Image 1: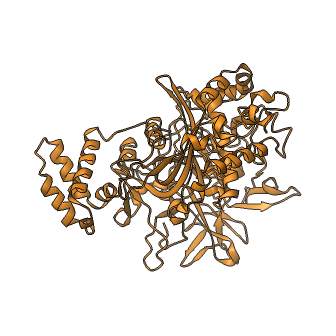
Image 2: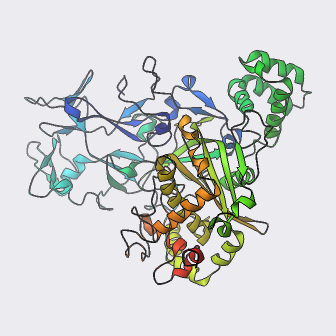
Image 3: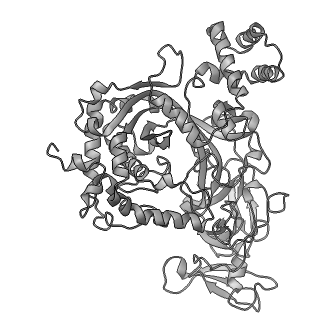
Length: 631
């Protein structure tokens, strides 16, 4: 691993795009050629002592860790704290003679310069090779595991694979452009060793069965190839991928909205800044000892700078809440259970007497809702979230393809660390939002309509086939329920419209879907909120769009836009499109948003469930509005 910085990424990117196991490329040296391609190292190598703690006790307990740590910031140029990385792929290609090889074998390491080609009379330098291989969790394995194995493309094997030999005594591998074919098919891998000359074109290299050997179980983000624990047994076949392909890395994250009482800033400060005192308090409580409240209040007030601004009874109340949370076993929840708690907070006004809280919610009066032409007939509830805080933790990642998420708290993923850790990397974002739920009576009647169920049958079949192919046994059919598909699509349309109305970019607006049933009650709602690590997330523009008259106009515009797509009639008549055909009438031209905004990576969408189809407009949930006399 070469010492010294190779580039910068933001904190949010470190728990999304560039987390452990991801590939990072830096264009530098020689007019912008890619001189460095690295894989971000596992969290067991991160500078834990330099990282700031983030408080969200319920989410931490649900994910089986004690705490969250915020990745180091790259903003401090005078004292940057680096996240380690390893060179990957290990094979390089000379930009002059196109010879392939490793550093210290075919290339010489240079200081502040790319590796130099060691061939005679060559002044070239090494750039990362363009191909890698990875195993697919669905190939030859029904376990549903996602190990994240990735390795260098087998250049030597490929060159000799059609010659009857897998290699020669002293291979000299080159990558050259030959023939008239463009792109990857016009490249030939050739061995120029004496008495060899074996070669093979890269045509067909991306075929599923192109590489006739099994995965070696290499996990380069955990260490070098010879380190203990870096490789693990694996017999899956491998697939060839472009080094810069978007399907190299899919982060698996889990999030929670901070809700009372743990959304109190005092509680957050106690958890982060007073952890030693808090741990002692919890231990005394667990041991059944009598708690000396006055002593602990004094310790918090006098031992933590700035705590004297809090009243003693406020600190005492915070202690009681944290002890109650600890006594409940840390409140380990599934994602559905966490969302149920969030929904309870979103459907009620927040306590106006709560001081310095990261959650402020106001439910719109039914009287005001009835003034809106569209909303009065279709919405059960509308709330304006003036202030919220989200904590998003990185649990792991997947390669080649991502799966629809039923429970991100337990989704299978590759590990971030070589060893079990008591923490996960996370970021906190603050913002504002709009929450609404659709009419329960309308939803119940519409969801049981035979025409609606017949329409989504192809998507349901595609989803079941997807689960069967990957050995998923605990199938969540709510993900393909008409109401879920409909509210998910409506959410995307509103995100697009909100970006035009309130000044936020669509990528800065997230969705959080709430769909379920419990004890005879059904709900179908969505929270649309900003997710910014800075004050940009709390400008107030989104909450203003939550006024009934504003949301009414915006929803009407979204539905009008959904009636026609530039890809129609192909889009509206589709029986399955997108990854594994898990969308119906939804494409980039009409319904897809930034993947950072979507809970399901732009899957499980169908705008026909909102507006109907030309042949069957009645299946649209908003049919009565779109085709009514007052429209």
